[in-house]
Length: 356
Image (tube, rainbow, N blue to C red):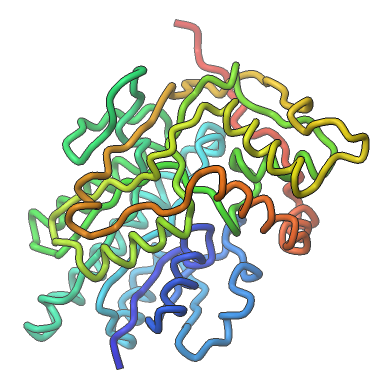
């Protein structure tokens, strides 16, 4: 039987989509997740008891635990997705981001290095450590250009800085120790199972709960959007075919301003869940005070991943939004349980930048 993948953060938004994709493809998974606020057992409904899926609740900073999992399950690759990931939360508490994203990644790398060194030659040749990161490490673009694998790092938020640090230490383990590390940097994801603190689920649930649809500033900030199932397909492809030492930028070729996103979400809601008063959902779009240090624009050139891996995002943005709205409508129990646990959709990251 083919050896499994060890997926960290496999009960989180991107991780659970990776786990589900792997199992659908017949790939065994060892899933390590601490189940913090954004990790959710409910997201694994239907696969938790799959015999090809081993779920372990634990911390990536627990080196002994990681070492035991590597020794017991002998994975052919580590897909490292466990991370604190919300910019607004990093404004309020940067320490948690440094601890998980930097120190946690270091702990994983140390355990993976020890494991890799002890493997037989054929298994050492096959092993991969895929470190999953973000486009936010590159900073902010103007109105033109795109990030690529050669873009200089310029992180602007505590979250982005913590991911930049983890990227650098992952690459250092490749160059210093020879560990077969691959780094991916991805644009904004959206789709099923996303914790409702991010923009698109916030808009959807705000509409369903009869509240205003908030967007920061004037809604002019631009992001490139990638449907999460397309991202999951890319990561599985990287684990199988990616070249050690390489970086792959992943994106959806779907740049939209936040105001455009809100309007597309509103149009999907008009179609799938019309307001009782017959008015368009877009009437509820409301500008709120901007996030401190909000980067203007991100966009990704993913030509390298497309050429080398034969991967390309397949979901059209507008179709992906319809699918996402439909998922939240069909899975009210999932997000209402989150509401009952205490997250009511409140604004985070309200710290103000110091005066110049």
